[in-house]
Length: 632
Ligand SMILES: Cc1cc2nc3c(=O)[nH]c(=O)nc-3n(C[C@H](O)[C@H](O)[C@H](O)COP(=O)(O)OP(=O)(O)OC[C@H]3O[C@@H](n4cnc5c(N)ncnc54)[C@H](O)[C@@H]3O)c2cc1C
Image 1 (cartoon, protein in one colour):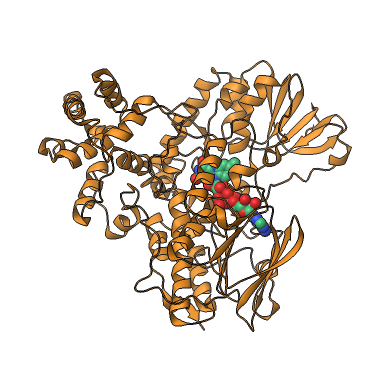
Image 2 (tube, helix red, strand yellow; image 1 turned 90 degrees about the vertical axis):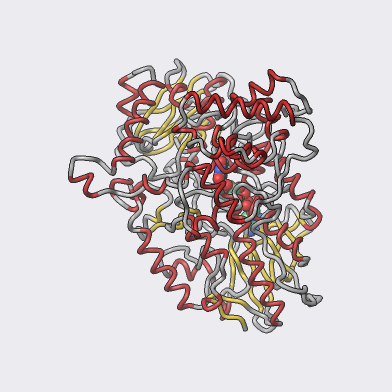
């Protein structure tokens, strides 16, 4: 990474301050100096040039005097009232108590802020108590770290040969996070030396493996262990796991199972007639053949979601010709700093201005606090001729302008690229020069449904042909296949997937628990991906792990054998969830409900997201409502 050696080099300091996020700079500097003039400044968006100059000059002066003196740039968490005042200073907006509780750990002053701790003395842990965590992606690692903290025996099982989950499985060209690196990291591993503002998949994988090693999880992990299924033994209150290992089939027992199997674990393979006739190669990005040589080849890329958009530029740079096949256009937006290295100056600032890293993390997330306001239909606005709402229509206009700019005003492309549904109703797709790639001589764009494969490629619904030697199916993931192909059998021999199928698809209480399946917690389960307000996924993996931990602690403290959500609580929660989901753009015609893969279209209900405001969901998952649970 960019090196961050101690220095008082004035030029470096000035460059670092010029690159800094001004809200983070101001609050960090204030925290170090208590300079009232800094407190009196407005938020960056409202700063005059003179305000900015004042702030920057103060920062430069302080750094010239102090940089290199601070041994460690970590400041302790300020007292609660002060922390809240600093958080308010960053955004310029007051927050409710619930919002404060959900956001207070975003600056990550505390090491393990979200983890559960024994409320008193740790009880004697029965010798046969053990937790099985299925999956060693970030959710599984978070659950492992939580078990380490509580001193609970556990094992992590993953069918992959190494840790990292998504970031081990997906190795397609140019894979990287599309949320800022500083927010896609755990609060307990501060200032990881990232190389880029949006990390490559490989770097995320290394980071996760580093965490797993450093916090002791790796030593408890077994790789190439594929859990085929698990059944609850009612007489002994334990799960019996059936595991495929390199040495053959193994049975493993665990008092508690935490599934950290990932929402994006099952690739959605296109079900297109004639696929067996195709003479060329079919490649899914989640199974990218290492060393795949596309040089000079005719390639078709099916899909324009996050993955299809990420890989097109790299594919088009080597392939002879690429046809992009889109069923429906996507709203694709730029991200500042995407694809760029972390500037040396910023890395230096993280190391030398105490609390700057913390507040940079906070400011990277803060723009999402009000994101939900853009995701609702405003009927009054519509009555006045608007499409969705004032804010959403403004986003639409900006993105259309972006399409025009990136395509160089090519009307033939523009006509095919503007979606007919509202922006922000699907997972945002981040541009990786996708629009620009479409303007290359060796790339063309086809819109429509694929009718069938032929020996030489694809035939579209309108009869047109797409010749291809390699077809890349960037068709996403089957998010309805939670946990599959593993099967889980709960009380009374009840099969989890049959239970879900008999209803209206995968459901859980808080995304984690299902009645009849005691001592089982899902991380990133059905309807758990926060829709709004954004605090970043790593926070959530810790929150869910801590929820399971609180339940396990209670079991152990009370000497009970089972913890389970009651049917009433499950039903009540899911009714409220359906009710809350109705208001979101995703569930409306304006939001393209028919084509949104976050929606369970068979049952016309929200499937992936939690429709709650982020802070409300945070409260539900951090303050356990014991009345909803049965401990026996
Ligand atoms: C390509 C891609 C890019 C993404 N980019 C972002 C991003 O930029 N920002 C963001 O916030 N989110 C992103 N996500 C979503 C999410 O952050 C990641 O998917 C994340 O890795 C999920 O973590 P997880 O631990 O829940 O699951 P995963 O990382 O999917 O890990 C699950 C693990 O469980 C294992 N497993 C599953 N079932 C079994 C079984 N029966 N037996 C044994 N092992 C099993 C799998 O092998 C896998 O290793 C992305 C997702 C994908 C697919």
